[in-house]
Image (cartoon, rainbow, N blue to C red; front, side, top):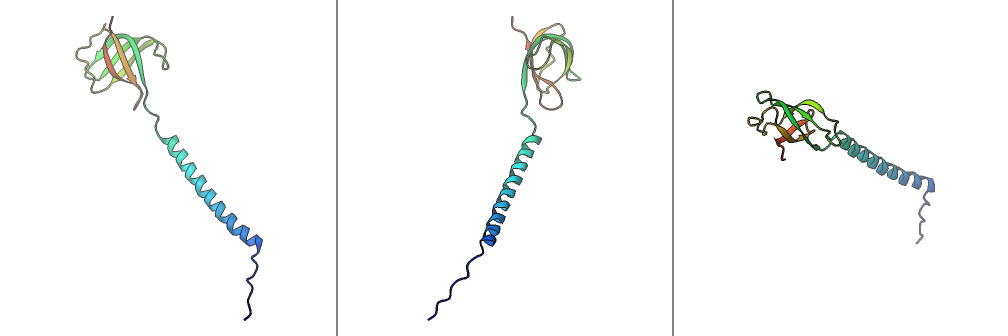
Length: 122
């Protein structure tokens, strides 16, 4: 019985096949990474809240706005007089102009919204 020898594989064709697989895996990894980074970049940032102190200048319960003359709000803005939208769950009926207030703002949605307001504690 004669034994047939196997043909010796061409080293260049082996490298080309394995290199092709590695390149394919690397390409898939790069695409998945780009997709993940793209999704992260498109995702809205988590809403932040800011605490403030000031005086209610004008309260418009029907328009759901309050104008506040406020002190500096750390990490947000210098003191000024500004009108803010008010969240639907905030009760404005008991808030009167001239009242010293403590409030919280949220940057979720379109612009800043008052999410809590109450008479200031002395």
